[in-house]
View (cartoon, rainbow, N blue to C red):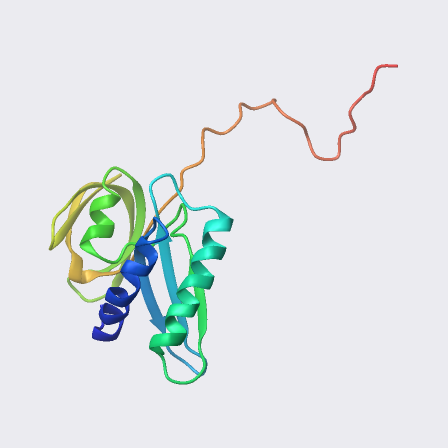
Length: 170
């Protein structure tokens, strides 16, 4: 995390906590019109009304502290089912879940890995893949997120078939 994001997190944490929420992550993407993304969470999830209240409250607080020069976009959201994993805390909270990640291998090339996160400490993660367990240093992980796994596929022959009309008994 950059110093700017760390300072912003410290400013916003008590404000977000007053709404019975916690800050999951804050990112600031640059460009012509920077976007400040604040991901908020709480046990049991966050509904749309809560996001709306959090957006108004965070926006008012940001107007007072003016963290970004000039104009910027504010996006307040929940981390979602497929949430980003960037910090050791994020990875620790996802132990036991399926994830996908991009990491640099020994040659420096990006490699995609998909599996179940089985362990995490402050410096490494262990992912069980089809090929076995992989332990990776967190500093080689470029991008990671949890993966929502849908239930089993319906059995063949069950359900409707596209283009087929249902027969209605008279």
